[in-house]
Length: 205
Image (cartoon, rainbow, N blue to C red; front, top):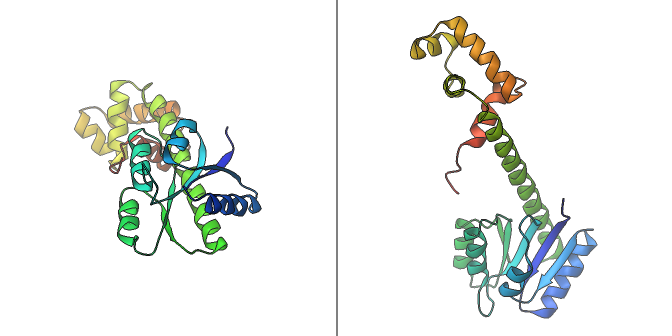
């Protein structure tokens, strides 16, 4: 697994350098780039951490970079740096997926707090993605009837209701339910439901 990295993108060399120093004081790895293009040329899919990007840059600005990463399926958490008159742009960045924005001038602890939060959000998102991939693989092993039983369990139907809807006996439902639990490696009904829900598409994606 790659190391957690804070990717800093800003055309202001002094600000880049100070942010790198700040990040490294928190025992985090930092990589700095002077433009969005430099980051895109170097960025590798699967990189973990967060992105700190200035909203105003020559060429591709911070908002455009955020949108480009999202379009490319790169879901790294983004923090935007703004100047005092850029709040509307910062709000737009939040609406399109950024996790935070920081106004200049800013304090070091505020930046580090935002970075730590973004990294944690990224970790949770990766864990959810891994759970979904694992659950999807297990669901593929179910028979069509077992999948039907699973679908009913997810919406909270009892064995009796499932039996009536599928025109089978409650005992047969119990057999299918046990096989579903076994194939999904579910420790409990709530665990089974969480796995099934993890596979459902994200409405915000």
